Every structure is written in structure tokens, then in C-alpha cells.
Length: 273
Image 1 (tube, rainbow, N blue to C red):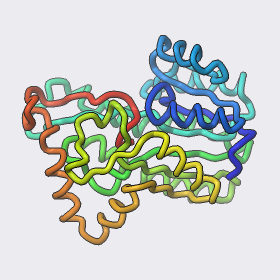
Image 2 (cartoon, helix red, strand yellow):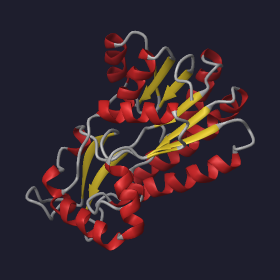
Image 3 (cartoon, rainbow, N blue to C red):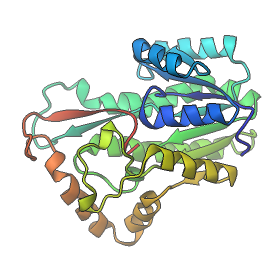
Image 4 (cartoon, one colour):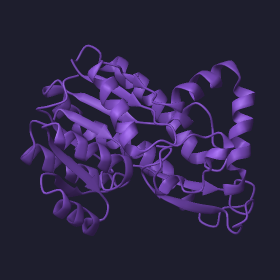
């Protein structure tokens, strides 16, 4: 994949992994649009990076996604790269009743439904421009981190969805790429310790590895420890699942030192993507 001269939309581009990719794409000579839910945050990013275009949009809201698509068609008709990156990760204790049954599925609404909605809303534009769709799943699509059970399930869903999407678009001239990051150093992974065997990489390292893989034409990108987790899930699933459970058990609300509650929000897009 040639990495300049594109019009690229990055959802969840206001922080972490999304912002790191957006600024790199801009540096490489692309027109880049980022979305996020907080306009104030987007305004600050625009001030720091005036070359970026910003659109306030919430992928969990169907009407907001439809509005985003309409704006893209009007102002960015040459859009040829969609990076579905928006997502949240929440620590949850499944052994106790959820206080808010609506909020219980927030990760599904954003991580899964948001990706599906945004892709569908813009698929005709991407097809017309014979473009590329990049879905950000996670190494946790293969092995679950016990403290974030619903998050991991959403990433497994995105992995399956992306595979089907790739087959359905294989004759349409559209490339479908899946990026499966390992643990990345952002606000989202503050509770993880490398002493547990989980190696965290920086956003710069993730972006560099991904850019290299995109240039090589890879459609499944598993940087760093993500590739190890992929193969361990096949060769010794019990071992790797047990290791991740031990590493993340203190992060389960009510299990670790912080205690309390049935869920705990880790923040917006960025870490164990």
C-alpha cells in the first residue's frame, strides 16, 4: 500500500493510537480527518495540528454516523482510507450483578456496532475510490484479558467481521486490513505491569511497525507480542489464558487492591486496542 496522497478518516482519533496514526498519516502527505465525541478535545487537537480536519461524531449513535457520512460525501468525496479505531475498554466483574444494564454493553455499542455502522455508511465512497478499510481489533481477539471480558469479546467479533468483509470486497478493488495491536503504553493500560509478562510498546513503535507492514501489503498485522499471543492461543491456549488471568486479576473491580463496584472505565481508545 502506498502511504501518501490519500484521504484518510480515523475514528476515535482524538487520543492514543488513533491520534498517533492520524499525525503520522498527515506527516506522510495525506489529507486526514479525525473524529471524536468531545468537540473541545478536537478543537485543541486542531490547534496543535492545524493540518488535521476534525469532525465531532459518536460511532455508538446511528444518527451521528449518518451525519458524519453526509459531511464526508460533501467535503471529502475522495475518501479512500477508513480506519475504524474508535473504542473503549472497561474493567468488569462478571461475578456480581451490573448496576446499569444499559452501560453493561457500552463496549459492544462502540467497538462493534460503531465499526459496522461506520463501514456501512461509507462503503459506497470507499468502493468508488477503490480504497482501503483498516479495522483495529487487538491481540485480545485471540486470548482474553480476564479483567476486560466484554472488551475482548468485541475484539474477537471485529476479527471475525473483518475476515468476512475482506472476502465480500475481494472483487471490488477494496483492501481490508486488520491491525491487532499488543499492549500499548497509553492511559488505557496504566494498570498493567510488565512484570506479569505483558510487554507494552509505545504508540510510536506501534505506528512504525504498522506502516512497515502496510507498505509490504500485509492484511493481518500483528506487531510485537500480538503475534506471540496469536500463536500461543493455537498451541497452548490453557497456558496463555492462565497467564493473562493472573496478570489481570488485580484489575477486576472488587478483586484488586482498589476494590469496589462491578465495572471500571479505563478510558478511550489506545492501549490493548
